[in-house]
Length: 182
Image 1 (cartoon, helix red, strand yellow):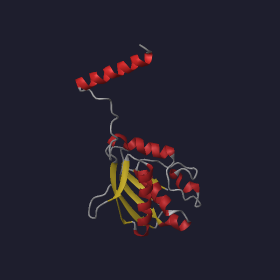
Image 2: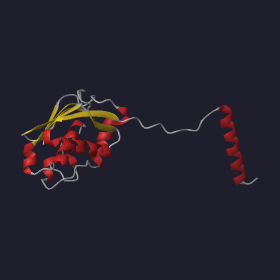
Image 3: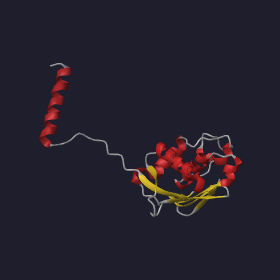
């Protein structure tokens, strides 16, 4: 008997043994469902579209967390407010907090979608990276007004994926309020 024939016979015997015992072949585990965080942009005034676009950027960029508009009257994880100050975020726990879309930065020429995605990044657990290049979303204003990149880089995406991996529940970290003024 050749080696090839012996291998075929062994494979056939293994198939019969598996079918008799009912043992199934290994299957990869299913990917866990994304953590869904809701946001309320009803107070975002002229920035509603920018907030929706910033959320869409994150939804395109990561798989373990999804940002969706809250149903009218429902309590949201993230509240977004427009004001005349500088953009900032108050993170109360991972995935929860308030974003202020400050008109001061917009009046200075900063891109509204980048601002929204950056501030949402804080709520998703990312710190500022300053100074930083335009390729880093969390470099914020240090990248300059000419920077319009609203997408997180690989390290930023990886950090958010890790924080929300395995179906982790929002609200587990950071442990206390954290204010980010960008």
